[in-house]
Image 1 (cartoon, rainbow, N blue to C red):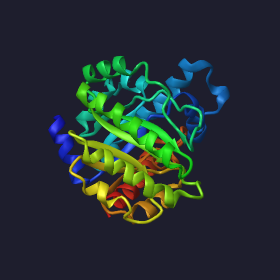
Image 2 (image 1 turned 90 degrees about the vertical axis):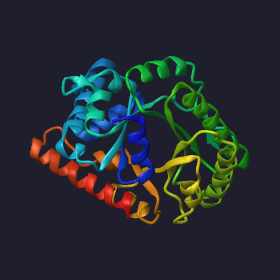
Image 3 (image 1 turned 30 degrees about the vertical axis):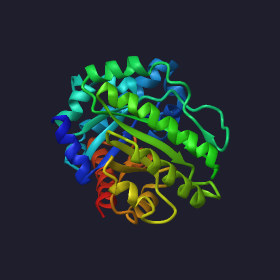
Image 4 (image 1 turned 90 degrees about the horizontal axis):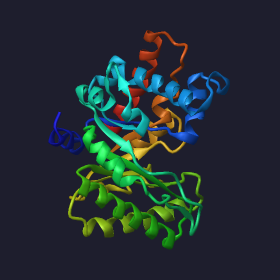
Length: 293
């Protein structure tokens, strides 16, 4: 599929993005959830080999390529690996799924109620490699902990600044200023966040995608969904279970899912292929229904 084909899919919103980008610190937890304990691997190479097996099993499952998943976010090592004997980006695109690459290098220490991205000193090289491998876009995460106007302004400015570097390299950026769903002042903070994003969108010359926590007030981000400089607004599950995340997402027409744990939570390494496909298919059906509700 072409870049234009994928853009049309996201604009139509008839599907969702699977987040398969667990990296360094989050990989052991993901493996434990899958049924692989820490004593079953030794060192980063074995750890990433195990998570790649899991991701390959997901991508090659018949239900993953049934048209309901329209994008997948990968960690760099997954992008570099093979799936079904082919480069991972190629395997995804053959299934009609746009491949995205996680490009941030982790979070800085909290200041002004937010955690900015650490300096992205490897970004240019990663973007060049990602373009060469046929990736469609990128994803980068920072986190908002409280309704601090100064911090929220800084986090949105950083996301757009890096996003425009990504656009210049020829890729579609997903900007992800996640709002911690446990923050007591999240409703007020989401008002500040929306205003800051709109300010940058009104000055934007090329479309971006946004990945946001499902808002406290249903429909709160409708102005972002409708903005001409937004290709798609996608939602992160933010710690919700699959059922909780889907119920909350369904209250927000125009937002589609970009779930990680909520997609994978019922998968286990010891399941037969039929059991694995059934569990994954059930999650995909639920998430797709909430995305198009």
